[in-house]
Length: 553
Ligand code: ATP
Ligand code: MG
Image (cartoon, rainbow, N blue to C red; front, side, top):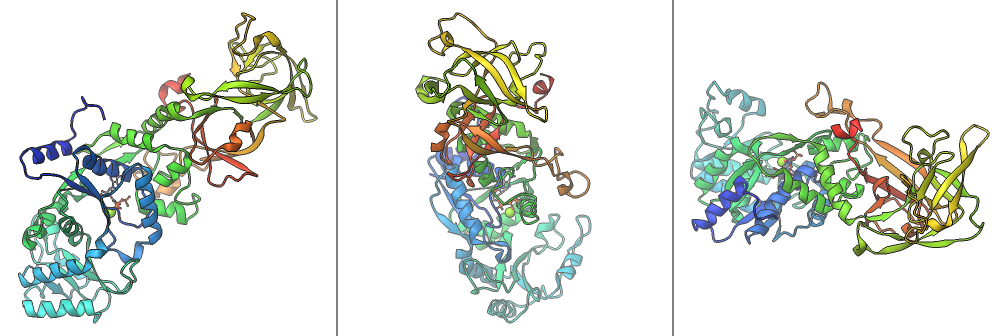
């Protein structure tokens, strides 16, 4: 974190609170609902919450906001923990709102006793109708005047399972003409006979978001409860409940959620992509999920750096997907090992190089010496990229064409003498002669050529499947386009290259390693890879094909 960077508005609040002695230390929390996998938007919240804890010597809890039994699963809990850890953060405590169900129940009883909550028998529709509109005052429910005793009994009966789903609710008794609609006797509890992933069948009443979130914050002594802007109207209720219950005064602060071009970021929509088979799963490399991005080859460092760059603001905006890719390239350029792989192979035969001879050439692993070197075997028959050859050289063509010279990376300069075609008229062999005195690192020829191309030796190459990815959506903002967001799915977002050839050293590739295939982009091994059949994902191209300058070139 650079020193000169100015504070964001939440850091300013935290510094003021520490300076005034309001708090000795801060405690934040990241509160996911375990109803889906985390996405890049959550990463922003994670970096913010855990970042504050780290920066100010405080702590951060991971709290599962698991108050909605029907949509939540253990699978999601596990994936969330994995993702937060992978991003590089550790939580002080792993907590579950469901662990507070008994305490929350007692809080509700306390409100009833204070005549600040009542059991209502109205249906959801009736409640909505009586609620009024922002310009028309609501009307009291006929059950609003129930006595404390009656409410206590009915609430106990709700808990005991005497009623069916929706038959009764517990509401706060605030003000049916409040200008903030959230203050018009909001629901605190609903009946739901459903199995919960942690509490099983112990409960058939579940607290609403507004009666779980702030109370959980208080129970944990959270000092700064940070959420996204849509919760601004909830803040009044957040404060009201804490005040009336007379519990730890956690405070809610809202920041703008991350929105990004060419993707969707609501778990509901991501779930649809998964269940309807538009992608192969939550961790499909095209998904904006942390697990998808990890599988695609994103580094945690690049995601943290992205979150740092976009900053924390109070106003919504749309971040260009290219910025994330910029951060990714910036990190991979530093960290990825350089290797050679040919995606669309055609044979190049060096006619004056001894048949059957192999040379172990030395090639650099990275952008500087610190990365070391590796051995790359060279022979008279190589695979090169089909599009590095032209039958007739175009103007300013510096690669292979009859008569042209080009350097084979880390090897020799070769001159192209000719080529052959198969029965279908497809070029199947490029014939060259090499210049022995031009060996890389030992070149005594004084020759210089404008083009350098990558290659792999046919005898030593390993076959691999390579998967190339494009953006998952064709529209910049699929969620705001007309019609369903799925109409804007890019059908060409995945290209499978079944028969690429990669250099021998990649036999040792691991899932965690990141590679730059020279001139072709950044790649990583996919989880479906096996020793028999290697599979690589292209994480990102070397250059941004989407930026305006790149399009002109
Ligand atoms: P979604 O709308 O994608 O379903 P959510 O807000 O319902 O997300 P939660 O599990 O409740 O998901 O989110 C956990 C935390 O992450 C919350 O504090 C939430 O505000 C934050 N968060 C979710 N989406 C974003 C986003 N796009 N940008 C920043 N923070 C986000
Ligand atoms: Mg939510």
